[in-house]
Image 1 (cartoon, rainbow, N blue to C red):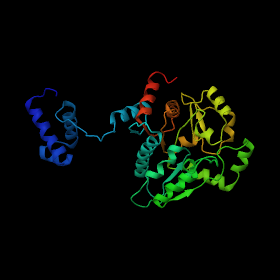
Image 2: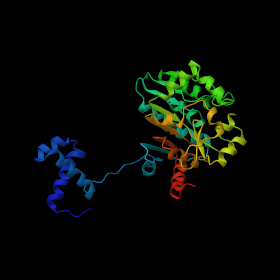
Image 3: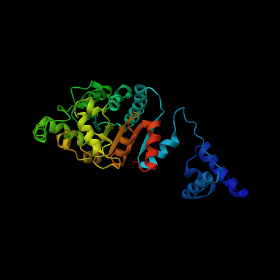
Image 4: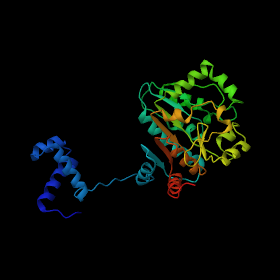
Length: 321
């Protein structure tokens, strides 16, 4: 503690007692001690700075608040939600999704529109989404789906599951995420049902998105949207991962690939226009994808596991190459 003269130490201790223990307002304290309210605030700040007041937070096991703050500071996020690392991939996904579900629940009010991406991590969120009251909100698919993947990965199914749990409404997008050509994509976008669904998603207040990797077993390959050969081409172009089928390099630059014109979903610019983008991601193959997407300036809040958080920070510190 900083050395203080007795009078100042006594005053700071008395003010701190009134504020932290007795729960008096700053106006009440100002009246009692004959001070202005701004002066009370300055003295309370000094009590913290000099060590007269020390704050101890007893965090539950597995909550690393320091790591979360380092992540927020490193990437300019509104919040980072870091789950403890476990060896089982499904359990890890569940832990990350549970925290994302809790954060999403706190954000929702009536008339909120939430855009939903595909992916296993986002698809795990509904299992943990349990609002205590009904919420009249809309969950809108932000991209097309694929018949080759199971329901928890499909954005339509995820949207419906979330809507059911709060008595909200789902806005489904009945189109594949990738089509044969840009011409086919343009034709589909002229259909009212497809255009309307994407318009709802683009006007969302919140987006809940996952991050895909660029490995041969990523969601886009498993779903049949891209072949392994196409994925290898993307990697040669510098791709490290994607969000909503939009690939980025390690510096956050958008990879304009031949397949880009075949995507039915929101673009990176669409995501940037959404006020709050919440990303949920797990998987040991994801650090470079996470770093690339974060550097693209898309994400506001990120729910991830401790191992990925530390690896991403380490990558960023060494240049992320």
